[in-house]
Length: 442
Image 1 (spheres, rainbow, N blue to C red):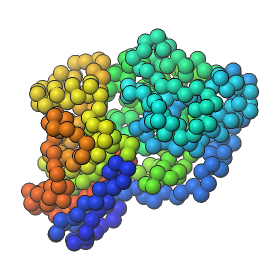
Image 2: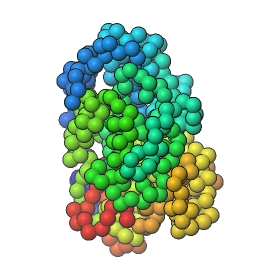
Image 3: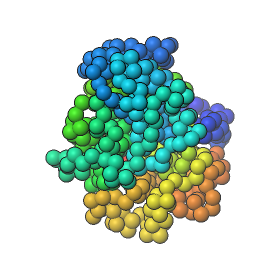
Image 4: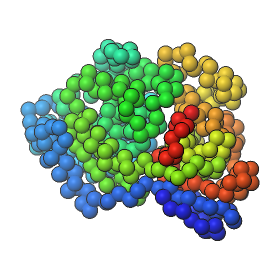
């Protein structure tokens, strides 16, 4: 975290595949909130091989593959900048060398309820044509009932457990992903790549129902008592033997940490590594907070943009102004999300929330609209974007702006507070106020 004196010219915010330069208004006191610096791994390929050879809570990968008849490797979809190009080939080569036929190895894109990744986008996601030419690379489809195995319900909360058959029935199961703050599950990666990543729509819609979404412990950077995390742990234990490769990236998207091993233990090791760098204390709350959706690929849609609106709420003063910048290069998001936003605008916040609280299954993608209520209840939300048409702008439910610097100056005038917090990397950084007298995202 750095403070800039009045008159500092610009702050650079992640935006699309580049950055948006924002002029700091005269008289403003800018505080830049970033991750603490993470050490780059000088040789990412060597670090991955080292993780395979010295895993957390499991035998080395070359031992795990022996005697296996088949394997399924989960990868995150295009919304996560996971460095698949670094680890998929050596992982698959180790499997083949250990005796698993390549035709029995599947790389499964853990789409959750997102759209599939195909064509050039799939090639970009995998990052290695050798992988595409050597093994099957397929998408998960949460709405295909026959493609899932019914594993009953969780004991504590009765969540239905449906998991993609290709993963459940594989002899060797490995999840891969990125460990970063997640605004409901605490942290992404590990168990989350399994559920909701390759879960049936009923499992996902239960996770996103109001009884989970409105729980005060279902927040970023928290695993203790987090109901969503607890359900995910029960689900992976119900499935059985699963391993995971977890990555941590620095602000330049370079590899800073990689862990491999038993899915729960290896995930917690990565969380331990990244927590202090990502969960950043701030000295005060601000009446003006300017943040991003972390740039490409997370800011491709307005749907994903909502995540960046939630993560900084602990440092936003009640009644303050949250300025969000997001390219939204692909537009709004799914038809279901659009319909939920239309209902929000038509009904207003209180009536919209009332329609959610009695449901055991959330409608698809309406949970993101529910999350948007959190910043809207706390203060003003402003959006700078270049990727939405007039109707899409209307149903965002927030105030659209064309000049970020002017919006900051207006917020300063309204509040009389010249201090402005800038979070260039958006939801990849979770600031918190050291004065914890107000719950996060209340």
